[in-house]
Amino acid sequence: MNACDSEIICSILQNAGYTMVLNPDNACMVILNCCSVREDGHTAAIYRAQEIKRRNPSAKLVLCGCYAKLLKKDFLEHQDELDAIIAPESYRSLPYALERLKNGESKFIVESGADDDLYSEIRPATNFATPNRAVVLGKGCNQLCSYCIEPFTRGNERYVSPATIMSNLETLFEREQGGIVSLVGHMIDRYHYGDMSFAKMLDMVAKESLRHGAWVKYLSSHPVAYSEDVVKAVCNNENIMRVVHLPVQSGSNDVLKRMRRGYTAEEYLRVIDSVRALCPNMNIVTDIMVGFCGETDADFRKSIELIEKVCPGDINVYAFSMRSNTHAYKTMTDDVPECVKKERLAEARCIASDLKRKYLSASIGKRQFYMPGKVCGQNSQEFTDLFNRTYILSVAQRRYQPNVQIEGFITQDNNLISCAE
Ligand code: SF4
Image 1: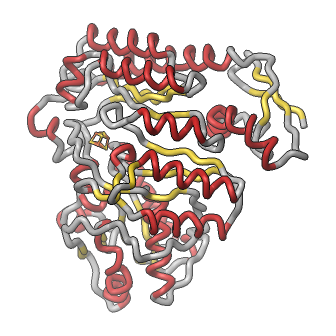
Image 2: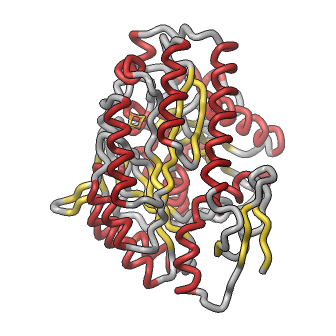
């Protein structure tokens, strides 16, 4: 989402006559586009701002992104390295804000407070530092999970028109054919625009992407909104990756209720069953949060039991960190000690790793086809890319790149993949 917003920022500034530089050491203005979802994003943003200012003291430093939405004037006054904060709905004001900085003004915040950050009329421009292959379908979330900051920083759900989505897709393909296009939205399954549903939109994007030799994936799904029509759209388009990210967060109904997730563990399992009934080779990816307010050992055991039942191909495990403004912040106590969170985190990660190995071991010794250029990576990011692309490449590579045959074997040593061209 923020990578897409960075492209909007680039477009606005290029239209105002600014030129992008690749290295912040050479910039007169540096814009940091930051995420607020977790506490560590906050810490990383401040660290990065200090680092940039140390290397380039004369640069003006502006903080943007959903993180910026949380910050108030007194924060700005106390952060010597920051010159201004621009909220996500106010990027159209960036050229004026930069002019104010050039004219010697400092320490100001620009925000309108409106849910006005779809920027549908602005064609994204390449941010060369982090090339993006995502298209935004919608922003905001009405779910109001008790731990989540997104509804406060991103506002209510609102969706982009099909015409804008297809136009932004064409912009991606004008830059580069093939690859993987990610459709993104906070509540992507709830996408709707007139009579266009998410399943129909996904189908339309997949068919257009097929003409450009590209694969499609989407994130993130929510168990209360995921529909069989979406699974059918996946099954009907062989260039949609057979992977769905369905975060469960906890296996305990008490914790799920306090989290305000809107489903029980049993309902989550029914969603998984229906996905697998329609698409048996769908790779399920989920999230588990440990140490949420009031989580007991018994609650944590239920999370472990649930993931063992689901057998996801991959699990993102993370520890709860309290975010200000949220319902949990106002009404609950962060009462699980850090040492207990760490223990649960370590145990859940260990089980996640075993489950992933189990999922992969089903492919040991089988021939697989992979995307060229990503085959021999042994770092975790490349491995994850391979992991999620396996199915689709087995189909798509033969279709789009019939002369490139890359054969790989999944091995048991450290989950790595050995490959031969
Ligand atoms: S569904 Fe819940 S966790 Fe996801 S963005 Fe909405 S409020 Fe946050």
